[in-house]
Length: 143
Image 1 (cartoon, one colour):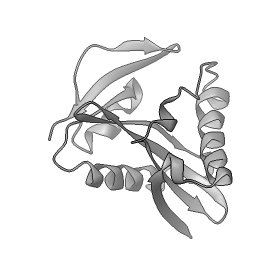
Image 2 (cartoon, one colour):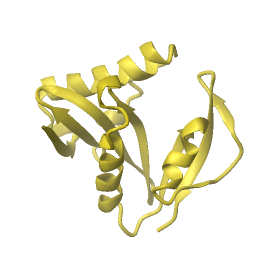
Image 3 (cartoon, one colour):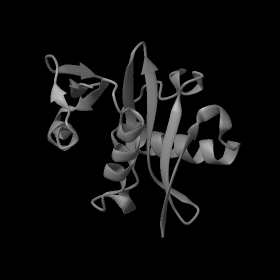
């Protein structure tokens, strides 16, 4: 049974944070074959909030919410292979966006996922760019 959670990074038990970071590395570094600094220092910002879903003891999906001045930024949206296509990441997005009510939210989407983010009210906000060899597009959801 899936359970949904959110908490500031600083409040997470070490094993929970480890499981979240492990999933991100498994998806972004290993599966997508991108050698890049997944641990970018932003998780430890005082306003960083982690959202994650668990299926038993396993983290099934995760995303993080950051403050970028007056705006919010969603990133590191990752879903375990076993949980894909089940709406788990979509539920995390809805929960994160609920917390952002009245604020502009930005993200950099992998280009092939721009349509998925559009379902949540995001629109492309600039030209496509390469990040770690993967095409991305900046997207915005205005307040």
